[in-house]
Amino acid sequence: MNSADSESLARRLLAAGYVEDSLDRADVAILNTCVVRQASEDRVYSKLHELKEWKTEARTIAVTGCIVAKEGDGLRRRFPHLDAVVPIGDYEAFVAGLEARYDYSQGEPLPHSGRTGISHFVRVIQGCDHNCTFCIVPSVRGREKHVPMTSVVDECRQAVAAGAREVVLLGQNVDDYRDPDGRGGLAALVREVETIPGLRRLRFLTSHPQDLEPQLLEVMASSDVVCRELQLPVQSGDDTVLKRMARGYQTRHYRAIVENARRLMPDIGLVTDVIVGFPGETESAYLNTRALVEEIEFDVVHIAMYSPRPGTYAATKMSDDVPQEEKLRRLNDLLALQREIAARKTARWIGRDVEVLIEGRDELHRPYGRIRQGKRANVLRAGDIAPGDVINVRILQATAGQLTGMPAA
Ligand code: SF4
Image 1 (tube, protein in one colour):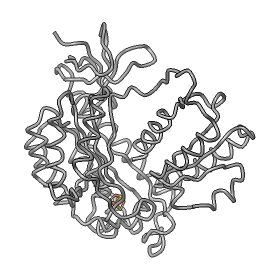
Image 2 (cartoon, helix red, strand yellow; image 1 turned 90 degrees about the horizontal axis):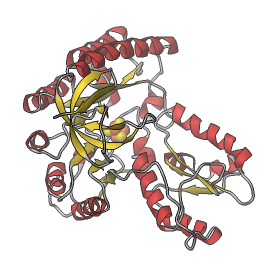
Image 3 (cartoon, rainbow, N blue to C red; image 1 turned 90 degrees about the vertical axis):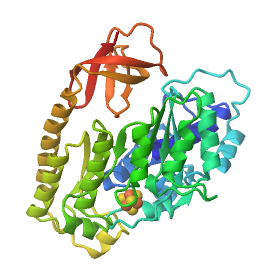
């Protein structure tokens, strides 16, 4: 979601004649922030401290993203060298102010690096209507607002016309999507977008086990464009903990979704999020999570230690009763387990031919991209391959995180 916001602001600035550059040559530094965990929030403060050295009369520092909703103008009191606090999505006045200060519209356009434009993020829902007890998102991003299907399809069409080969539909809980004009939910939207000529790949994230419709899995299974990857956070493998988290489902429900997804798409890529050390998570509750991770064999598990976020239900009404060292032990235990599982799973790709959408070249100048199931693939002896090409690759090697292969005959 933050990447999508950064892209949207960057597009607006590029249109005004601005280019991305290194910090020492730049006139403007913009921090797009995340506050989902305390560590992310702390990083913003430390970056703002660092920028004090960089700041001069002629330079501008701006902050946008979730911290703005959380801290508001208090940020400027705490960091007097900060020039602008920009609410999420409210970029017009900010860019107009910059344009009045630095006019680049007549300058020589400079090439800007880093953005291949192969993948385009499209926000379809802003905010979230769930109330997971650990989560700060609803209070900083607000309640759900759904973008009309016609606008989403138009944006995707324009992105493809401008060179994108993949679009990623985004929502905190993307399965909740409902077109405000009554044309249907996420499955209907996916069906519309996948028919755009020139679009090679379509992804959507993040899914919620309570809202994911079986029909969506059927659309995924029957499409050559929709990627076979599901980002489906489980958060805990213990029903008591899930209830305390107010997630709205039980583990048997989660298992049923995975079973159905694998029946339709046996090689589907599964990504999940897990929190260890949530208030009231006993050793046996943790072991239930461990058992679920072992049983399902996810491709990727993002594991976080619980940290109370001010203003959430869990922070105000529940005791953070799992000691820090125990949280760390559970985190490391689960990481070790998942490393083994991921290595085993990626090894299964060796010898198979897979379709790779090329996204760029790595530091050794080798093309890399992703397979439809989400894994990164590096391509050896690729010859004349450009970002945006889709090629078949025979996988020769695999590590826990990525695949390597050569163009298939
Ligand atoms: S579904 Fe829950 S965890 Fe996800 S953004 Fe909404 S409140 Fe947060």
